[in-house]
Image (cartoon, rainbow, N blue to C red; front, side, top):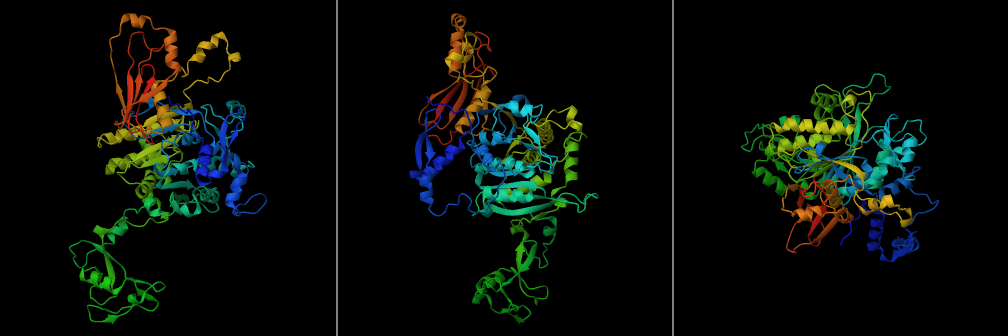
Length: 633
């Protein structure tokens, strides 16, 4: 029987396995403190393999460093014994939607998603805390695993969110922010597809540090551009020099093919207006472009004479060449793709037709008139919530739509991840974009259970930011459902929680008679079939948005059989809650189902409902039937 791991992947062990593939002689075996053999790296042998390419000790090197960096790197690799629990009552179209909304610490979420979404995310957009001196940052102190420390020191909110203040008077002001971002960016990079891209919003407070950090995590060659977004029309009059812009740092997963990750954007209205048709060309409006080029790389074939329709003969001006060879020029001239001016006496220019335009290159400056402003974003959310100012600093949907336009494809089921979801502007943008162009993009939002600001208008209605975000998506869905039948306007709500399995590590001396029966059950009593189902999806690395089929089964049961059900039989079922057996080798799917299990939560003699997920197994050689022995749904 295959054993489920019940923890997120151990990324340190994964790194050792990668080293073993490159340098097999450097990986050996040793014993851990419990005497269990494990793979370890012999650094002396690794030094020999790398020869003189090692920098260590006091030797100077170029790097970004800060107090706590080593602990932050450890935080990224350390496995966690947690899971995702579905919350149907907070979801919309739970069984069929492809969208996910996860509530919980995004560091935990990124670890849990490592196998299901490894290399599958087309676009990541995040809007992290800007570290302005009044922000809150996530606390990732793994030195003390118990929650007692966080509660004792006031670093945990009433809702359980691990948040600590980071005022600019803190001596570790920048270090704490970097330690928060470093492990999250490392885990996010692993999720990006080979043609994926990441955009990060930031302002001047941490822009330089973020650039250096992303250079380290993604590689300097993966940097594409820093986009300047003008977010408002006028500066704050109280400032010496008022900032009216933010930045978006853009990196790609594969530096060799940046254009596979970032495409062109649609022509602006001004660019479209520049297309005219003065010669009544049947191919429609066109715009002319310069036919000359620089002389640096020009060949002798680019210095030919051109006879104009007026009869005048010209050559390229001094310091310039033609941008094409004579044969190509003659082909374009024959096809009426050369423009000599209305009088036929101008320097030739090439005609580019609007019908053939593939869009325009993305500029590095985005004005609020094109992609929205802070004020527009606030108005959008306020109108959606019937006049309530639900969020203080949302991002405009038009800004999110611009990012989607250049970094995703409408009908390729591209996954869009935002693990600082906040107001869920990106999720709304994905939903609206799909409704307009018929696309099938999917979003994956992660938002910590941060308490709503007690002074905010929404505080009396919503306990957490995540609750506001979910309601925003529900409101958007109701709007679009009226005119876009068939569009995916739903989302699965999931919550990060401790593992579904009981801690059964107690030794015999620690057990008393009262706790013996509790130790028999391996599944926590408050967990459902859906909880176990998603635990299996995570452990097998399956897509968490697979459609779920729920079927109710009825079966005649002999009264004598029902009456003889004992606590012993129930305990036996819960001792082994997850079991599966091989199916036919010819089968191309696996059915995850909830089988019958007598329990204290179902009436004797009644049959619980049955949940199933039909899916293709990922990276497995043979299909299985998985039976989750659980109670009624």
